[in-house]
Length: 353
Image 1 (cartoon, rainbow, N blue to C red):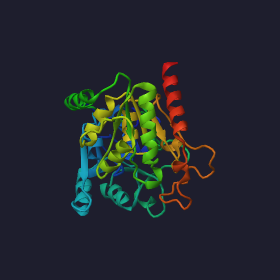
Image 2: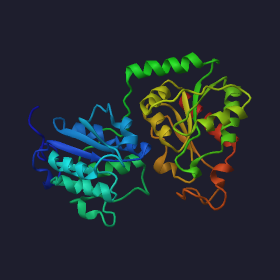
Image 3: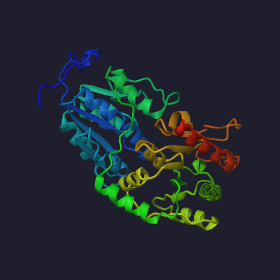
Image 4: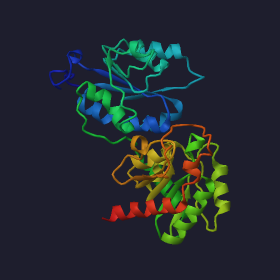
């Protein structure tokens, strides 16, 4: 494998990195969108430590985000409520990592980082957890995009950032299957536009009736085919949207996360609430329009040069980060379809210029 790189090879690393770096662990357990945005560290770690073993610890719901990543050697998947946490700690202790990056820093991931006894344990100094790390990183989650927040631990060690894109690898066989699903269902000659009405918080969801009106108007204005995305427990939502509409849409079969990414890669555009599928679409380089209200698009918006976002700008309560709203979720409920449609038109215009 060749000689392991050291601080002398990669200045300006601190003295902690003077020893050879043979193994690296990244910890980010959840959620799907957050785990995807954290994969931005993996190509940079591989560039800095081409001979090192790089592992990534996450939880089962996000496993498909990590599996197949060409920059890591092993995806360590923990199943909450099923796997033994003590056994996980023992496994991490025995792995003898040289550097650990905890990109989550909750009490359990702090225990994971500490259990490794790695010479370099990097994390955010949140209250009650700073003890687990010997390199602390300034918390900028309220000031910079999530990708940059995840890259800050690398910058703290002087590791060069050569790539700022999240990683979502596409499998050729899965791509072919999903292309058959979408192309075989198409009825029109215009673009294929995916709509995602889901959201982990109720407050992040634009009304289903608004999605229905938007879909009809996109069909009428662009002769578009509309792909209504759904995940576990959400099929009734897309069926409700379809019933509200004048025109027919495509409702795909149940998909895994990797199949969803491949399906999105066959689309021309994505319009989505702030949710995991929005970040997947951006990661596979699809022009994406994010619909925002309680979360801040500057911090959590779709991350590629072809994407943008829209929100009801006249409100002063935007970016509240509340999962329940005492004033009727007006940031989403009152966002006009015209405003979203205008933002989509601007997105298209920007791609043509």
